[in-house]
Image (tube, rainbow, N blue to C red; front, side, top):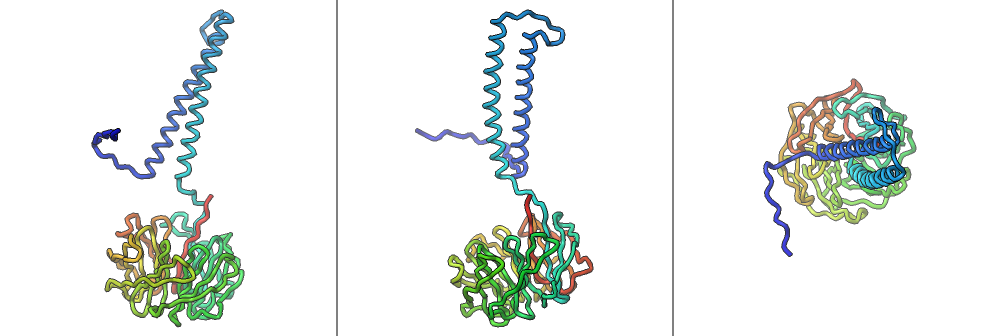
Length: 376
């Protein structure tokens, strides 16, 4: 048996995922409209034989009534079967719909005034400041990370990490702190699964914590592989961990298939890194903030262990960028030097377009950024 010969259809039709979903919903709506007309026609049949249809008067026999009853019964059974298929179709469509965002907040660490600012970013390009917190325990906060509804804040000056419950995003509640006795100027954090990695900028290591219980981190190790030099930022894609080296202008690559035993598999710099700070990833694109020359580097990590540089940007508005975070298709970049956060449209990830900046009058040496989203 040969395969069917599918003819070439022109013109080529190209539509977005959103448009496909809208068309599928429309197809269901039109089918429901058709079924509504069928049901209405069946109702008029019954009205006809009963003599209640306006302008029509008949005297049906028992045989007529039975015949109409059978016809309507068969039609309604067919309609019900069709409705079941439409229900299955609708449920399948709903499964591919993106979740509905109920709340989304951007947290910004203020290194110089020991606070964390909170912005409502349900509209990602129009942040609205909704508060700040410090709980009297922040000391040069420099990095942020989230697991579930738990926010971690790294205190660079006193070598601790604060723990906050952000179930109510605008009113964080401090739950405690930890250091494991092994933190030395913690500068970057990333969460993957039940593991929290923290860079130690002063002793050139990365600490590993088990956060199966997010409020009680347990230190399970550290690593350096002899190749870390003032490590700052962290990012994860699958089982690959990236660590930026602020002192030698490289990014180290580790295999974390075994999260507690990272294996170094390489490094890169492409000759364009200058005091690389924080990192973030969207799809197959890695962004690296260059604190030293006020740019953000762009790498294609389709092959995670072999990043390929595809460009950089600054738009003339970056001033010692440190932190990076993403909400939908908006990239936030904190400017340490001029106390602002820049916003870029990354609908095309390799060609960011600046769409604005904000400060709210309350940023003071902004460093770490993170986004917390709650779904309906």
